Amino acid sequence: MTLELRVDAVNEACPGVRSVAFTRADGGPPPSYPPGSHLGLEWAPGRWNAYSLTGPSITPDRWHVSVALRPDGSGGSRRMHRLRPGDRMRATMPRSGFAPVDTARRHLLVAGGIGVTPVLSHVRWHTFWGNPFSVLYVHRPGAAPHLDELRELCGDRLTTATGRAAAAGRIHRLVTTAPFGSHLYSCGPPGLTAAVGAAARDAHWVDARVHSEPFERRTEPGRPFRAVLRRSGRTVEVGAAESLLDAVHRIGVAAPSLCRSGVCGECLTPVRHGAVDHRDAVHAGRDGRIALCVSRAAGPALELDL
Image (tube, rainbow, N blue to C red):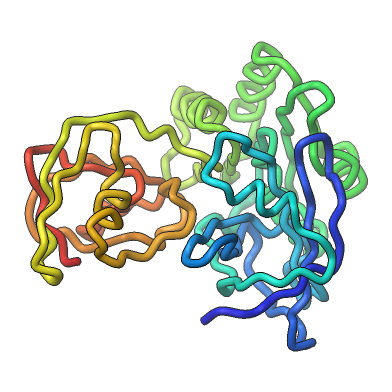
């Protein structure tokens, strides 16, 4: 299901980051959503990107997103930075793969840069319900979107860090002093989420209590391989530096996509035969599917139900 949205307000969260508030074009109320949800926005015909919702998730009057400008990106962030009040966009319904765990004794949140966006929605949720939580916000000096909002919401539950050494020390303290039964959440660049995960493993956290959502994923080149698309009756050669999703689109076969970063799960496709090098964050390997946007064949060929 898609909705038509109207831009209600635009402002600069910090240099290089634009915050946009949307209302429904038909005047109806936007639906509520779980904290940590993202919204798919069509920034060009047939081109969609996913953006985390930052505003209140319970009976919201508007939907809010914040977008960092990526001059070398595919164009989605540039389109978002050109929006003006009154502009319209098509959107998906919100969905979440990064929601808080209700049974957690305490919620430990680590945000890096623009990765603060889903963490902010978690913070709003926890303050509304009175849940115990704390936030570590890692950012570059002078580039901290939503820092003032976090300070107002968190008070002394917020810690910040602007250098790698300071961030590493605070992460270590966070994971080694947490009460039993805590859950750990991180969102940010791959280096930060990897550091949080490594610190948690070193402190003997179980995987089920550690949650991450990288806002981008490194798609390292791999070996070329062949993809056999059974339903379409087509075969495509996937280049070493080409994603499987791009190769499928190149030969004109339709495949769903949204984030193109292995985070949202929109492009998950069943694998009929062949080994997969899973590089996504949605654990596609658990149910025999592949994230077309980032994952690849682990051998010379794959057969897909596509």
